[in-house]
Length: 305
Image (cartoon, rainbow, N blue to C red):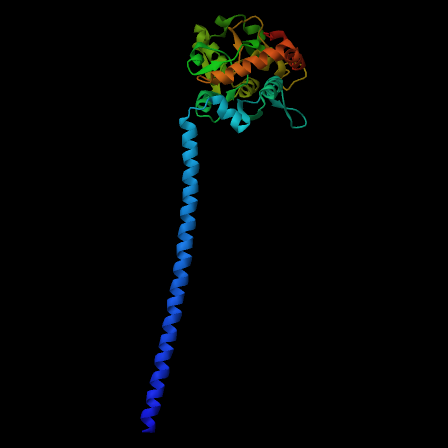
């Protein structure tokens, strides 16, 4: 009898223990379910927030904001350049200076935006502009009819020209382009220098060496791997002759290539930014600021305003 009573009591205790364990499991599931639900809701909220942002961007794009809105909303304008003196180059203190550098900063100050100078491959300048990797091309950009199909231009501010450079010891060999037949000629690929070489029947038949930058064309002539180089007058004037690293080179004054005009390149459809830049250029020309910058960097002899 005692054994039966003891067995019954033990059974009751075990049943109560099982009920207790079941209760804990239920509470745990309830807590986990709550946390899971909160996490899911949090994630959904984040997605909704992202979707809202995307929707806003989409609405902004659909609203047809102008290119100037795009630039002014950023508060900065990305300017595509290559480095060469006297346009955009680093001084002995590592500061970016030059005629185009100061000119750009002066215009941007009037427009209320900050210029961000970005080095580009000159051959790819149109692609960079259209893709909005840059907003402007402002670096000794020559106005051509072909380029007018892909970009708009500001008013002309410098009248430049392409010149032929040669080692001084060889200068007497060349009196005109006809005397250059059979030579090798270096220039920057995609530049006005390349256009000038291909526009002349004799020069077009020479060995043409395309370089990634004008300074590389200088190096080709210096090293003797090219007989001649075609460069912007502005660069050649500042880079060769007495007191430079290219003291043994000179411009061939006896040979004249086509003259050209420099302007700022803007996206073709961006009429508002273009108008603002032209207005700023007018103001800088009228108060004498632009001429002062031109004199500072030795390009006042080709100043066009």
